[in-house]
Image (tube, rainbow, N blue to C red; front, side, top):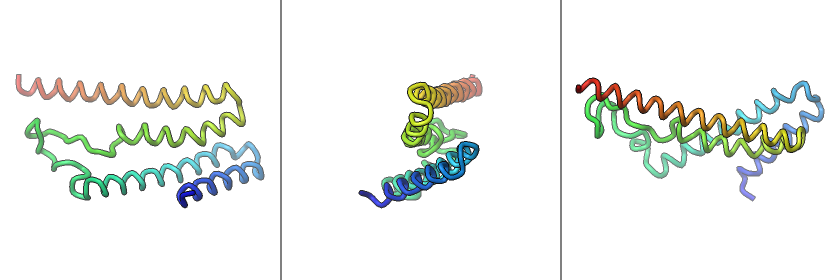
Length: 143
């Protein structure tokens, strides 16, 4: 097994053991702590893969003001919230599924995944709205 998977497994085991020792009143803090560590690992892993594939200068796109839309165009950056959120939510869905399934059963799983889908859907809709506002603002400047 990969050492990274071993590290995550050890962290999850330690979190579950701490929950057993401390009780349910510290459950949310323990889960938040575990998820923040997992999130930091995922961020570092994504950053490393992006820089390996694109190189450090290309990873963030062209400088501000350059691009197909001319002056003032803000380039879309790889690794922004739009590309990280689905990856992070799927990765975090695994331990959340285990926790929700063990504590609340089927209804806990349903609530957990409904929340994950809801967060991703609202983020996608928000980005669409922002993109429409940007394009309408760009059109009005040239009208």
